[in-house]
Image (cartoon, rainbow, N blue to C red):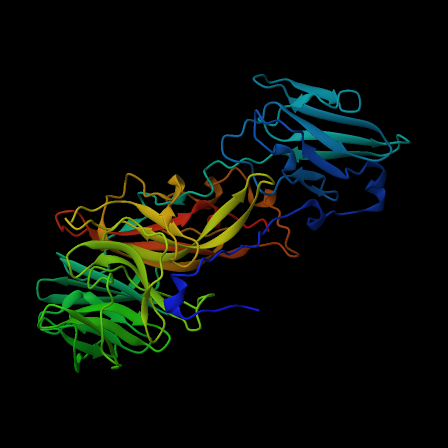
Length: 508
């Protein structure tokens, strides 16, 4: 039975969750069997324990293809693993000979080891596949196998942002001074302005950078940062705080809603309500929505501006779907690093461990990889990433934080998730996550590294445990739009990032 709580109780409840591991064991792989190979069959293969090379290397799983005579680890070893001195364990039954032939390290000569008499001899896999020859007990059948130990050529779990994987913002304008990018369903909308001119670009194909642009007219004094989109409407604040809406993204005709707001937090996706606040004459702030609900005071500690974009989730712990945001500036002028959420009726602080106080932080939902170094298997783990932002003085940063529990607790992301030096520190960027179906031949103008260069494996080496060969798969990409430096200067950039492993042919 699933236990759920009202939103206001989440912050006061200690929440723990266990994530089921997607791991593998020898019993869930495949063995091809054929009667003529039985006498010379290899029943198991593994590397012997060798902590000086890699801890738990003896737990690495090897697949055995008896029909094609191949033995290999479908999940490669970490980048940099030394392969020149690896003793092995070969499982056989009723055999008379087991020989391993390999290239002597640092030479051009081969040598053969009699495994039955020298089972602890080290084998060199660094110079390519090793020949394993097995002869049946009666000496009538000999079977040759190719043994390959695969190693990643790159760090597989790095969030990779290549220098060539960058475009300028999609716009017809020559000198862009503001940008706001939002997503609704499979569509991405990018609003840019240059002075009083405005352009709205739309795309359903971010991977190939295909956009349709339209020059549009905005309400007088429109606040670009307030631009939002629900399932059926666009919204923006005019210079006097009036909330305007439009139904078309190609030719928007802005109509006043009759509501005024000082700041828009975002959209509550469950019913497409606009969430915002209004600054009262006495300097206090009140919460309000469009369509209208009861106006309430902004709770103590809740930001009134500068928050991240909002994410929506059907929470494990709440009766209702939650839309939440991170960071922002308080009415006092200070910044917060807390997560605040809305469940359709009330707001509450839901974070138990916050990020560094700041505003203009960009957040997105993105899968990460958790490697089990005891079995050298991995599982995909859902996460929320927070990238960049600025402190109350306007100084931007490149900090990447991560939450595995829907914004309740935050921690610094591992170094392999950090932004590279090629991406400048920034605040006010927008992150859009969009999946692309990849196949073995995928290549576009974004590709700085072809798929066949990302790993030492050839496609035929990357045997899957699936019942049918995997020829295409969904790969999630992060697109980072705009952002600004500490002086407020806009970056006319769209970057694309991806965890390397997601571009590899899946092995499970």
